[in-house]
Length: 484
Image (tube, rainbow, N blue to C red):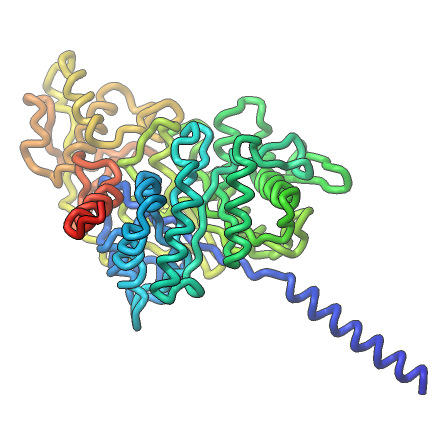
């Protein structure tokens, strides 16, 4: 009888161990960042259809553009809306402004058949070292006010506040020695305590591409997931790719603050396809497919075996031709889809290869090129003008159009401007140096685009028009209600 009891007890213990181990396993979700700093924008309804066709169930936004939010209503897609850094100061000092922001951008959409808002990103990389502390004082006070606003709206349980951080917030030569920057220790401790008390994850942006781009000594194979001759040994652990090493550096840093099990969401990760020598279709496909395969395998990392990131948001859904190129010309080419919703390369996010956007309306098949009958010696100012409005970054060193010659460069610039102006005949004049052609001038991998018709073109008036428009509307409402 004693033996039977012991055997029964051991079975129960085995069952409990199995349950506890399985409880630790996390099913990661693959989402995308949907940025709108574009020169050619597909209609939001078209984008939502694209997401649904590709079974992409999670999307991260950088603002709360009403046209985008309206398109997401009833889609069932899980959404992270964003608050621009420029709004943190106001939200940190004005509970009324915080209440209003929640009302306008969260509560109004959290209705039956509305938008499934799961997270609100309070700022975007506000601790970035290049900001020199500009936004740091506002982050925690803004979080506190917004949390109270969510509570007043009975949404504190359903919507979690997070703060996407750049990986430069922590540092170490080896993952296990990871610590947060000394200038951030106090504020990160406050942030992590807040996240923990509200069952919210730590959100981090990880970019192995930037490590490779910025450091000529960085081993190229270590940036990918295909194995490396430059593995990093850290005690008993061995790292075969930069992503795992970076992730575990954060895990170690959180552990040193007393939060070793805090869930982590990767808010941005990806690889650009143009604008730099290491930015191309082959590299982007290799990195993104390797990343997805690694995450969906649920193998985790050496410091978190069997526990992959809670969610991973690829950066980005589309190319954004209106973004600043201060970090590099590649900044406009992170999309897994081109501006018109066409998959750039075969990529399987776990539901089959990417499908292209449906029913995209294009402008007529015509292009603006340099007039072969004209002397181009006086073209420089026209070239600069065209490229100051349109995106010419593919012409740069390492770009896909870098080797098409002087006339090719001029034609590319003219056409980019012409399409941006929706093929207005006057936009191809350039004092007689431009010429409209019906023959596609694309050469090899250098694609001369044709614009789309179902767009809300940002033109050249506002870089980041969605965010700026949201700010204008928000502050306009604040003035009406005399909150500021």
